[in-house]
Length: 330
Image 1 (cartoon, rainbow, N blue to C red):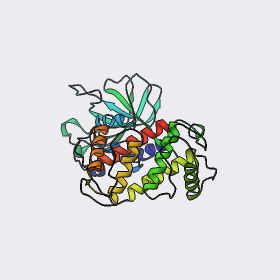
Image 2: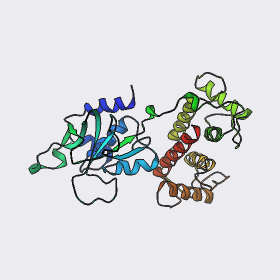
Image 3: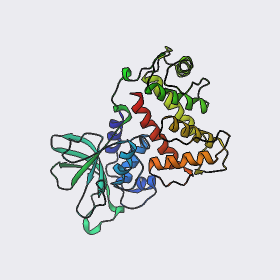
Image 4: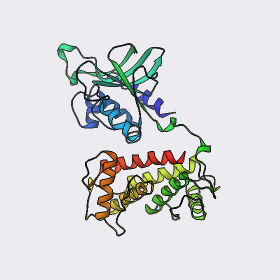
C-alpha cells in the first residue's frame, strides 16, 4: 500500500476524535488543525521527508517547500489530488503567500468537489474553543471562497524516475557517480561498510567493491551496478546508523562523542556535494572547523548561524543533502 493510501486510511479512522492526542504530539494545546496533519505524517514516518512537525497551517508549506519536501500552489493553478494538504483563508492581513488560517488533508477529489479530513472543526460559534472541536470529514467545491491553496508533498513512493535513471556501473563518469561515491564515503565513515572510494567522479575499482559489499550485505543481486535498490539500501543504512547513534540536544566546540562523529560525516558529504566549503576537523571531536561547517549549513537551511549543531541543524542538513543527491543521481 502506498504512503498516500496509508495517510488516507489513518485520517478516516480519526473521525469524531477530539484534540487530545494531536495536541500532545506537537506539545501545543491550542488550535490544532496543523497538529492533526503533523500527527498523520508522523504516524506514517513522513516527518523530515515530505512533512514537518508544526502547529501552524501556513507553516507547513512555508517550512517544507524550501527544503524540497513538496510544492505549493494557489487554487486554480492545477487540480488537487489525494494526499494534498488544503489551505484556507478567511479574510484579513497575511504576512506572506503561505500564511493560512486552516489546514486539512485531502482524501478524495471528484470533479470540482474536494473531500477532506480536518482537525479542529465542527464546533458551534457561541461555544467555540479548541477543546470542543473534533476531526471531521468535509466536502467543498473548488469555488468555495475560503479555499485558498494546496501543499503537495513529494511522497517517497510516488517519486518519478526508474531504474534506468539511477544505474551506475564501472567505467561511468558523471556527477551522479560523484553523488554515489559521497554516499559510499559517508557509509564508510559511519562504519556501515568496510570499503570506500576516492573523491573523483569516475566509477572505478574501489566504488565497484563498495557497491558489491552493499549488495551482498543487503541481499541484493551482486552485479556491481548501483541501481535504485542498491542506492536506496545504502541511504537507508546511513540514515539508520545516524539515527541509532547517541542523540544530543546540541553539539558545539569541545564536544567529543559518537554523535559528533556521525554529524561530521554529514558535514563532509555536504562539502563534497558543494553545499558548503568548510572542512570539518581532521582530529576527533567538534573543533573550529566543524563549527565553521555548522555555520555554513545553518546559513543553507535558514537557521541562525550559531555554530552549535542542534537536532534541527542535523535533520535539515540531511534533507538538503538528500535533495542534492536526488538531483545528481537522476
